Image (cartoon, rainbow, N blue to C red; front, side, top):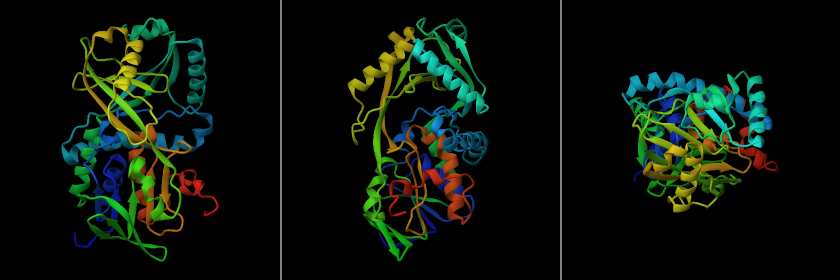
Length: 376
């Protein structure tokens, strides 16, 4: 491949990379997205698509809440916009959520979280088990109560990525197949992105490679402590009406009925390196958790099992912003289980930085400098 030129190269065509490309190209910036596999081929294309902006971990509230709430707002604004621009319906909808509790310990933890969330302004409350089953009688009789929240949503994650990509292309972005191998610089200034097939000259680059972003550590000369965490999901066919709400349990499992009539259930949390193959152990864990939540689904037919790798940073927080010591290189990774939720706000923030503007939200806690304090 001959050396090409553009304004910005984005490495990674998942929800994060495509959202950044959309926000930039809509502003007239020339963008090339580089993807080694195919569009939404990894976590973004297989994610359950649950959008829950609530932050109940006390030490993360002040840091994460501005991102999650702004991004949820952006999701609501983007849906009609992307639908009009592309005709791709990714079935976004606001949904209520029931966070189930089976034990007194789970109930107390849930009630404590409700108190935190109510102080943040979320519409959430505690329901006892009987009230929970009035919402849906299929929920297990073992459930002693649940958090009920009206501040959640869902979408088809693959179709969402497709809509972002097609809208970006409509505004002039280009998607190319290629494998990232390094960066070119003159002093502190980025001059290009090196691929296995050649070089693309550019003034700015965004590394949005999910759990593979750590491969750029040697090119950048600093540590990007990010690892893959495997998540497996099931789609099952079962009789009965759609669930009236999203169902959640144990900070891991989410259940919903989608537009295709299938019940979607996920996800596992497995530290198994870069193994992204579905497994019998993962299937059994998901079936057991699904039947625990909704016993009548014991006879459901498993239609599809998928697996993907989420990018998890060492401290569990996203890694966002310009790389210290570089002029024009940005990181957008580490969103873990909230990549789909946080993709619009990430696209907004990174695009504003590339356009030379101040970050629209505080991002200092997300700088990669936190892992490289001596260098910073």
